Amino acid sequence: MVKVLALNGSPRKGGNSEILLEEALRGAKEQGAQATIYNLNTMNLKPCQHCGKCDATGLCVIKDDMQAIHQDIRTADRIVLVSPIFFFTVTAQAKIMIDRCQAFWAQKYVHKKPIPPGPFGRKGLLILVGGMKKEPKNKGFECAEAVSRAFFRTVNVQEHATLEYDLIEEKGAIRAHPSALKEAYEAGIALAINTPGR
Ligand SMILES: Cc1cc2nc3c(=O)[nH]c(=O)nc-3n(C[C@H](O)[C@H](O)[C@H](O)COP(=O)(O)O)c2cc1C
Image (cartoon, rainbow, N blue to C red; front, top):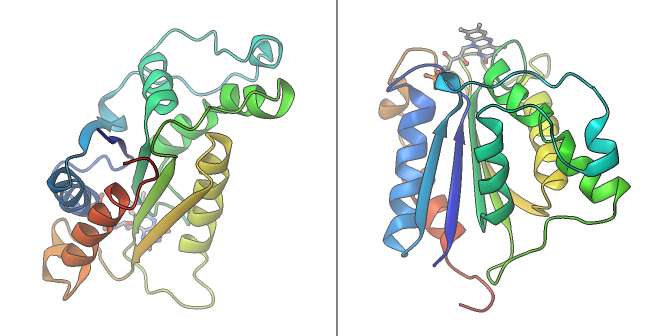
């Protein structure tokens, strides 16, 4: 069974990110996938202290909720990262989680031991939502995509699909979008199917 790990960076309960995530997971579950969701905002996550210990061992020494996330990142077949744009990038909640993946960076690039792909390979889905209009001066989605790409590659997810929705400000406004929920649902299906060895 394909294991999907969903990481939600929005602090808003019932917000646009959560709505889109639910649709994506509905699609994935219909394909037989099993999903675990972490709402990062409610978790005890300390920011990376750059102590350097993970360079030596590949392991993070901070004992908080990140230990469970690390375990699930390691064993997931699919990772979904969803975040609103806050000040032109992912939320602090998402960024703290991402920075704590420095331990995986050390495993991959220092110890040359990237997370091994399981029987289904490893794939990702990035969902971003922002209130501002996407235009040449608004680099929010671009910056969030760059940060998220670094995260995915570090945890050895070599390919990911991206859904981006601009001009979505109010809580729940995504429900009025003409295609977003359907696209998220279909992205969830695509995430779970076409898997090698299935
Ligand atoms: C602190 C803060 C910073 C924000 N910065 C941006 C931004 O830089 N660009 C943008 O498009 N929207 C920005 N927004 C708007 C949110 O991205 C938008 O309301 C989004 O729909 C929230 O998603 P959620 O309901 O999943 O939390 C910001 C909102 C807050 C609270």
